[in-house]
Length: 291
Image (cartoon, rainbow, N blue to C red; front, side, top):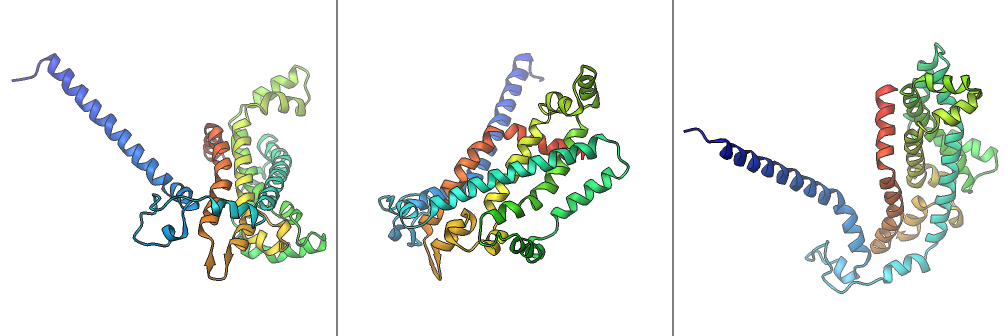
């Protein structure tokens, strides 16, 4: 006996409810798995030594009363604030240099119809694939020749060699997705090519710019090999080398302070990243499809 319309509707409603519950359960499980390391770092930063080093204790809860001593140690007994400041200003300069050089290069390769534009774009991108371990010796000679050794300025000089190739490739793909008619109409209205680019193209290019900014700053904040090779003084170190240098002493690891530093550095980057997440994803996907 076949079910009536009411029975079919109830069956459809149950199936829809079950599918939605399954989707939300999977999303919550995935979020918990992804957030697990961060939650562990937050809890670890406030744990006592007796709680942390007992293998019988649950690592995700406070088995003993929490303490902020290790977070205070990070600020009072290490140069963490100096490391964070060096990372901030050098990262912002790397972002600015990357945008200033990659925007004109990507525009010229994407808009001027040059026969060698695509091969050159591929060649620029291939530079990014060269391992830093093969380049830091030759780049070290450049740094020494310019008198920038043991200075954070050496990182400002070196990091754009990594960020610019990817940024040019990314922006080329995004520019190809923007119709040329937009800037041509702006030039018909009396703007120069630069004026047409700034007023007509640049607003549409914003997602790609956001992707470049996030990529360049994240790389400048996390890169380790060049920072370790070129910067030795404590007051010039970025976070990526300064924190492990002062909190890993032989076989002694200040785990709580290390995790506190991880959280304090990752949290602002994560907040800014999430503010522009849609633009960031749009920039990378558009560059990947059209590049």
